[in-house]
Length: 564
Image (tube, rainbow, N blue to C red; front, side):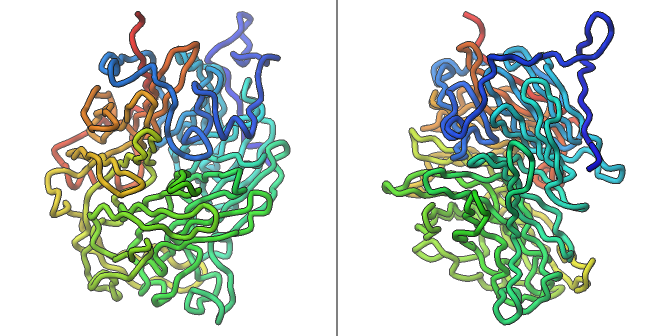
């Protein structure tokens, strides 16, 4: 395999002029274990959502409702240009961040000093500035799933390449952060927009050697007569991309991951009728040792308007039983058993106008006029951007609520057409789109919502002029953090929704805020930046044209309480 990796330590040079890593190997480094990933030390944030349960919750409470108003900037770090959607991780006082374009860095988490940097040599024809949503740490290695569908294991102390491999072939990409479960690095990949023999899926690799352990493809290859694709040849079954990282329950020995929509988006374009198009638009529960699908739950069989239900799975107990909650583009809080996927009653926030659900929490059918024929113009809420997307919810065990970042908009001129039904053809099939404000929220495109997972009750909500633009962060200090496209960052009281701290950033808050501690001091880290898909580009430009943000300025900004 051609070595694609370069290590740079140009930030610090020895006195004789030679470049060397800033942070030398230390015998004091404690390898990260499976137990630590399941329950990190209070001051650590080891995975994209801190732990394997994907709560996005920090048990730190030094910063709390009484003193959060005193938060001030402790340090900042400029990041590489490109699409910024990073999720920093922190272990034992070191922050690891994924930059656009296949660049990873280690920083002193107390003051932002660069410790090491890794730069990947990207393919010449690869799109510049593609995002990476984060890293994972396990043992003595940091794992980086690169935008060009590579996977690199880096020495956590020096940034030196330990091993590297390919997650998928040419044309595929990885945006989601890897997750480590039962000693294996698990990565989902995307790039299945057209009709190809190579499908999207989830792959697992040995953390020590990089050898592939298993691979699960997300598009069913069941033959005609037994399939759910209206008899389409396998090569003409598109979609099933993976956008988001997995969660893991060691007790159930199951990995949970979401699969995106079928392609083309519309039933009429892909010629599948109302058949289910497995395993798209579904949760897969996978055996971590084999990748076997132990169960799946498809939320909208035969989905037709690009309404993904493919995002984070928050692992909680409901009525004393192991459960999960997730929410996709329709802003329906789906709930189900972690054991077998059995649905529980779901809670619709009431913004969508496309489907009905049963009392037991299952798809009941499309509403009239929401399934388009070829070239027919229809309207629906949300638009294909969704009310929810990659910006993850966070959960608080104190309130038993999820805190939801939303973008509220509709499409009043959607149309889908024919695609070329041959290998190499395909695509999303969209002919037209006209985004519009939601009739029930004409002045507010964004919203933060707190929703109880047991009852579905909305505890509070805060309308925003522009889209909510970060994942949410909850802490044991009774706080919820989130930011918007208009460069505001907020700290809310998790119970009442009162704004307890607000600051204006130099760039839009964008990415995954985290909280961590070094030497007993708590910090809040906020990624800011540009790029991203329509939610953070065309939607605010079209629907809030009076608001602007700078064209560059990726960074991570870190806040703390002032010294006493």
